[in-house]
Image (cartoon, rainbow, N blue to C red; front, side, top):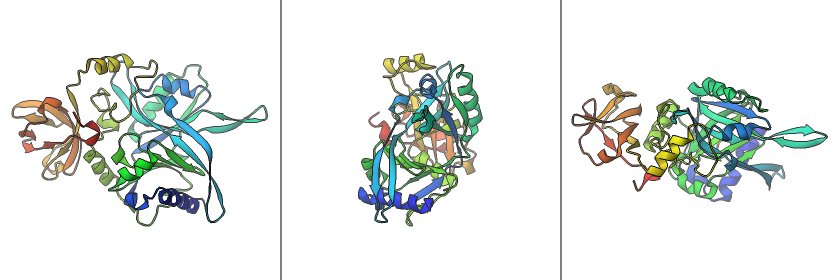
Length: 344
């Protein structure tokens, strides 16, 4: 079956790189994500004009052929997705998303041609708004924009030593017969993401992989200092660490909201950033939530953007990182600097 082949495919690649044990830890179904299909000859132009990253960095290489012991020939595609922001005219984040290349063969003049096509992986609460946003800029471009949740479901997987696995897979995606595995391009510790066709879901993971809840994954994400979706909506992308999370390109052409991003980058005037937060006990039980003020004595120095148990993420003024007196609702909080931001 396709699911069994998918399991063989995953296991084969992990053994091939000698890192099977390093990531056999957890997997999670990302029920908070939605997929949008952007398809058509002008899809690259549309996305390139609206995204902070360079869509041309996405790539597909379908030349790899793998022979398994069952003598089944598997055609594997090596792909590279991008993480990106989509901004408003004021330079603030309207959306953040992953753009995954998903070419669609079509017959034209008796020849098979690959029409540019992408899956845009976005927070489920923003999917409808993103479709409207893309559609409003489509104009006469030959692009079809529609929900793709009937095609794929998103999963993530990783483990305590995911960095070893990513060392072999850095910025690559492997797909088999519709099953697409990609390194999370934001930072090494975020593991891999999987676009699984709905008729193959859930993917057949190796036995040592345990499924965790979305809440557990969110807590893990906060520990890495990664905020996304509504947590960073309406904020400035560089303050949300999009550059360090590989979500901004300064080598591409113009895009909506670019002027402010370029000005802030070149002047170096970034006074606050998103950092992981750590409490001694469950912050939610103490009434701490999105928007709660982070204080240094009587001075407001930031705010909470997300909370899960005793960990969270927040926007904090950089000059206050060394303070030992930070509190939220009079509860002590410690702020750490994630690896992708060091040195700061």
